[in-house]
Length: 612
Image (cartoon, rainbow, N blue to C red; front, side, top):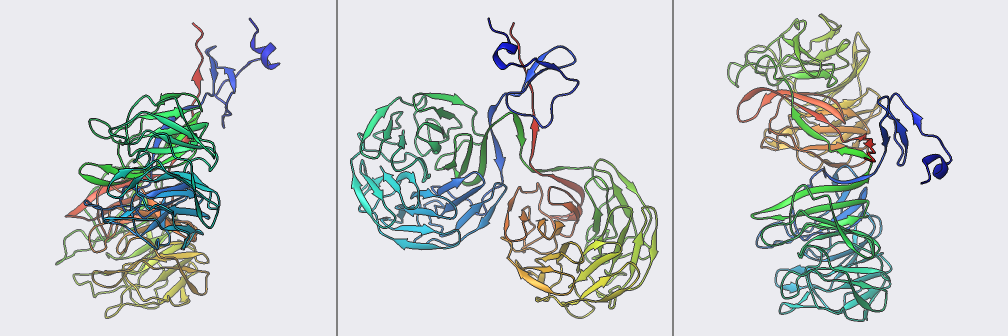
């Protein structure tokens, strides 16, 4: 038998630690003399939810650049016109389709997509639309209007097959698209519907039709070569309304409806045979697939009695992918809300706030420091206040503005600096103001918006470490807003123009003037923001109900992010886009709970090779 040296021309090294970063195929002995390697395995991991739950949505693209067009979002089917776009971490709002429908087909990419067929109410639709990454345009219709249609390809070379036609018949027809019109092709061997839920899959000359509903759930599979269909090996599990990702010779097939209930099973296809692989985390039917067999995307669906917004990502890698998520942290020593926070997840602090429900509203001077595990009391503020802003690292922070005394109208212009143990008063804000946004560091910070004793304001003030000067005015007057970034690259998002009138707008600051940015997905006030101008996360708040949602900003677009466990507003939040916490706040009641966010991680995992 040949040894490894003969096969690879290399000796196997002894290493004290696993190589990092790892490379697929690396082989070594560890200090215990065990032979180890980086060997790829398959797994699904949770992605951020769609902004709107739906099923029979039409998806196409890749795991890091996909679209989900229209779909049903209530039972009985109600058509949603919206498109959402996936960037590999979350969904953002795209352009509305011209004709809302469910169970249509899709093809192409995020920047050059195709959407055809489907059903709207009792109508079987023949409309075809193209997408340029922002808006949809109607083009040549299908020859046969139908729902539950499947297909794939590109925006200029697509194929559509199967489906349901009036008055509810299965279809075997095939049509090909050349960028302007559809032409009839040869029929499938078996008429069927509900093959997949609107996934863009394969190419015009190499298609794949998997299972579906014939007279019942089916296991049969057919391949298309651009001219004719041929039957190939069946899947292991019969189902319909499942998802499909990949190409004709390398695909994965997942979820769907089986008896009983929704399927979690995933099967991989190598062009010849089907093999069971890792299950979905959440079994569902009416879901859609896009991407590839090694980087697939499963979107939305239905699990009785609810429509789902779930997204899952399929990976074949030697790394273990852990989805970003919120988790419980250590409780604050006492209940507080309308507090501010500064620092990071592992070196942060909560300062000030109110320790009672609206009414008496006694404010606190307390500072509590957090190391990611334990809260420790720090130095007290000189002036007790709530609705204040704070920024900077744990050992060099600044806190400013707020309300004090028993009346919210008692606004404060006080500014105090923290050195990690005590607070020192410095130059006052130009005017007393509360519930404004603040960001930056101790020697270069800004305060924007808020409410004075009598009215909301759009004023921005800039801090140099000792005194405040006037900056550029916000374009939209707002209070209960939050900020992130720096003095010369700042961000404010959301807020209120009046009680229970929350905003979605954002603005960016360059150190002298504010420019309107794109709106966030969900109205947002009295929440928290963490990060930079080009990589921020907003979380919690109200609109007007307490929010559990969080969203990410990349400097251009807002996208969905994993939800928090408990909705609340007026808590203290800080950190960066991939690592943050929220402490205290007002939910169904005042709380002292802490939630922590950790972004998606991929950890190299070495396998031990055992020849015994």
